[in-house]
Amino acid sequence: MKEFWRFARQMLHYRRLLIIGGMAALFDAMCAFSGFGIVMLLLDQIFGKGKNMRQIVEEKLADSQVVGLIGDRTEWAQLIPANQFHGLAMVLVVVVSFVVLGAAMRFLYQAAALTIVLRTIMRIRKVAFQRLIHASYELLQAEGTADILSRISRDSHLLSRGFNALLGRTVRDVLMLTVFLSLAFISHWKLTLTFLFVAPLILTCLRIFGRKIRKASRRAMRAYGWMLSALQESTKAMAVVKVHNAEGYERRRFNTINRQVLKQEMKARIVRAISSPVIDLIAIVGICIVCLVMGWMVYGPVGVEPPALLKVGMMLAAAGAAMRPLATLNNTLNESAAAAIRIDEVLQLPVEANTRQRDAFARPVLPRHRQSVCFENIAYAYPNAHRDAIQQVNFEVQFGQSVAIVGPNGSGKSTLLNLLPRLIDPKQGRITIDGIDITAGSLRSLRKQMAMVTQQTALFEGTISDNIAYGRRHSGLSQIETAARAAYAHEFIEPLPLGYHTKLGEMGTGLSGGQQQRICIARAILRDPAILILDEATSQIDADSEAKINQALRALRRGRTTFIIAHRLSTVINSELIIVMNDGHIIDMGQHDNLLQRCDVYQTLTRTQLGDGRAA
Image (cartoon, rainbow, N blue to C red; front, side):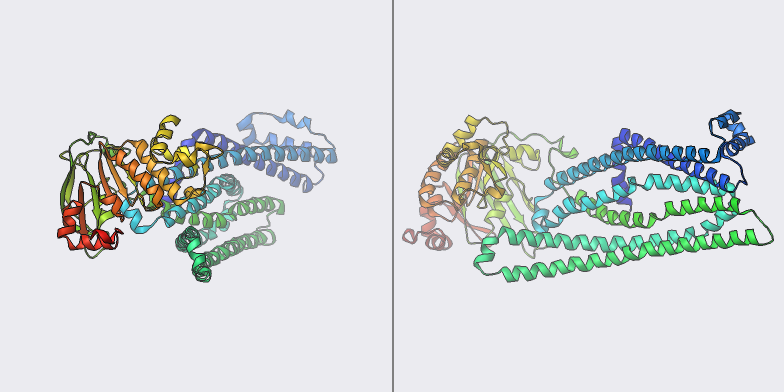
């Protein structure tokens, strides 16, 4: 539960609302207590052997303890009619007034409580997403993000349920329980202790039920994360699912996971369902014991008058009514505690040494690249992998050069280039830019001078101009249009009804694959990088567009260092340096003609993968 209470403390950020809500809850409890006190006066009139309400109130005000508290106020009794019926009617009007005032205070308290809960959950989601967005790229790639997204969205909702339960009727019920137990204890402490005899048993049951609910809830939330992962996979690849007639397979896979979710939720349901009846049973046993003691005191040798015991019994019954919601509260808090544990695990994710992190402010800003990029004895292995993905990689690239990296699938090309912007860090060796180790400077300044265009287009929901200016949001429309023209994207953007203000759907729906890729290239052009990384950048573009894009990329590569991964000879052949990789090693490097003469792997790639058999 410690994680839950740590999150709950964040509600203290809204102290003003807490004070307003607390005062409203206090007034609500006072109104309820005052109404209960007036009902006690009605009992006095009913059992008072002909006394009217004025006489009863006058006796109460003349009591020595009351006089000691508020002074002699017996004249107030004259405000009450002497007629018994009229006095009864007046008292009932006062009771209704307290009920109305209490309802208004309850509304104010609930509104304040809901506002606090909603704002607190918003803060928690904000911090969790900030942690996610700054988390290690390597970790996210290895473990996936579906379960983390489930924690930020669904688990935060379950956490809010706990906050609502905590701030809902809990404060009022605790106040009422405290007041009624205190009055009952003052009126007859022996009966009150008899009633409280069952309290330890209730607390023990609540603790046992709570522990079981936390475990079952965590398993259910984990299963829900698996279900979200299956939904993402099947919906993103819907075309593949349909063409391969795999709807039945996906349906069965989802149903299996769905049954797992149900199984875990059913376990939690059994504990939730049994907890409230057990607590009620224990409370009723306690009340029955109190009734037996009261009966013995009335009918036994003690001979106590029934009205005195009836008041104490009503106070204990009111305390029991305030205690009943504790079982439901306990269940809700423990479900929320399970959610809090999972959200806290997101907040413990290791993060990159980003400039937003406290330890990164002292790191120097890397100057813009103008000399060379050097890979020195680089080795890297993925988490839980049995061998290195790349090893003993050494090469140097001068500023302004274009470097093509080729090799069979799985040879380590993309892994090698992911090291440059520090999406992953080498297990051995180092990378220097202009002689400076890239780990010595701030990560933000390193990535600020880079742009990457990958095989998988990365577009976001928003306008076309927003997507081109992604990461450069202060760019003007003229700059955006210039970049689009350079990427040959302007020719299909301009005819659109809203032009650059056209809204794109999720993942850029509404545009063809080639159009999406050209927008990504325009984004890179607008960024004006010193180092350009092209990972299969023209793979989604037809032959006509490829000629235009290659022309644009040749212009873009001037005055900057470019690293290219490509499976097309037209992209590779004009590079100043071609690096041939195989099985994580660099086996040769040079220019196209030289490699064709001496490198067997490059000859094979040229005939097969690069798509030009005549070149061999």
